[in-house]
Length: 558
Image 1: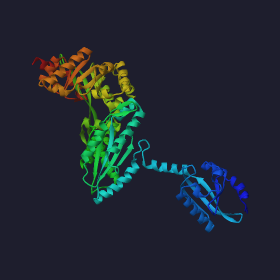
Image 2: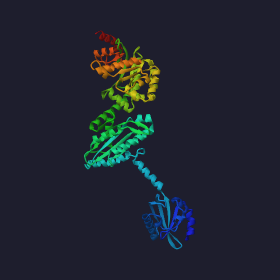
Image 3: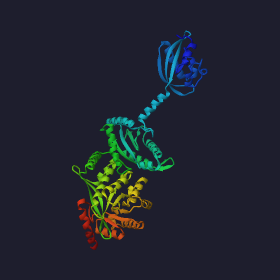
């Protein structure tokens, strides 16, 4: 057994960890090379000195007490504690102390492992487990933990609470326009705005993408409308981000927690249901009611049934509404309109099933089915063109143009006989890739029609750049044109614009003879509406297209 310090020091210098020896008077008598490197010291800094000369009083006293326990009991003691080293840095040390005898006197031998980085890493992992790394806000896990507690308190009646789910409107456009760095910074700034909008004990969480959640608790009355309105206002203020100015809005779903509160997962589902309803019109909030569940259940039923119908074709059909030349009433084309009759759901309106298709990703398949069905049917009808509506969602698919050309090739319908109807809003919101797709199709001979013209914000520059073939005046202006001067002025202005730009102007929703006469005199080129015919099944195409010229001429003669 080694009894002298010189013998111990030779052994301790070879140890791969920090080692030091103190005597019974708490004086340092040895520190090895690793120990010096650990703490940024030299032996001369510590040897012969007591802990009280080296460390803060509280820390020196703690060290001394630990040494005394080892010296009295001659036992091994392991501790983990946070200490300040000799240069003032906070360190987390794992220390193992034992009693040894040197020159007949008891001493404390300690091996020290610096686990500061390990503990910091563990703390960071724990932080990440309940926080969003980008914004520093709580994450879904932390939110649900607090939500469980809030549900329990609400059930006891000790507090009022509400859960807000938020989704940023227009965030994708910010990413596409300015890049993801700007988008990320906008998310950080929006999180900070929410944090300052609620109390210090309320929870603000980012639960994914551009979705946020806020859990608000109050011992008194809780003003749901006031809180939601404040959040809407905060989102509407422009974001100055990395030399860019970005504009977004937010949709909010709200669910109050009451004495009948259920599990946190159910509360989140209800908030999501309300958010889904709010997003239909955007930049507003909706407070959850039981009626929303019935609406969502029906939507889900429609979604499942539509997917089955697209696989089997059962219940789906195309109807066709004629389009006539304004000058002589001759039928020159047809617009294909999807129809769906389900054995259980009955007649499902296009407004319902098209919206579901757009939201669930089925619109591509539905759109291709309508396109293929319509083009196939038109190969048996000479000279008439076929107009097919295109969703804004379809324009975001870079395969769309190829799909159209594939269908034309397979059905052998000349491209000049196909007209794609794009809503004005879809064009305004389309990105450069979508515009390039439409130009590619037009170059191949497909005609492009701008639908619902006058309801959006398209500019002359856009009309020129896209080089559309037609504009369709929205039915809301058509129906009021003979009676309201403002609507009449809009119709005349669009007709003059179309003439100046070499565009065909179409008026839809024509229902009376007075409307027809006004629209023809105003310079519209084509007309469409119930005055001529409603949309008919495919087996009536020849009959309707053959009779309409006679009927239209009769109107003209009258």
